[in-house]
Length: 63
Figure (cartoon, helix red, strand yellow):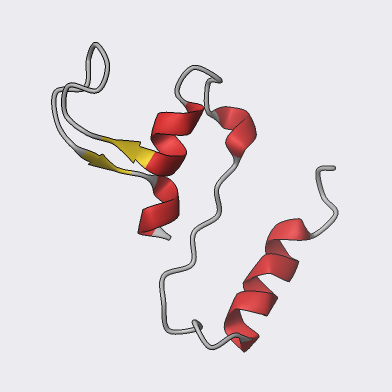
């Protein structure tokens, strides 16, 4: 639910973790169209589908 502090809690957990010096990225899956969700999260290789003109890292790899 909106306004419950999920992002703030996630950031606190990150700050207390061994990965605190790593990049912290909040991903709102609700804003990604269902047809693009897999490609956005996991990335894709050039030519894997129509319109994939380049390799693309996914958001999870970026995080």
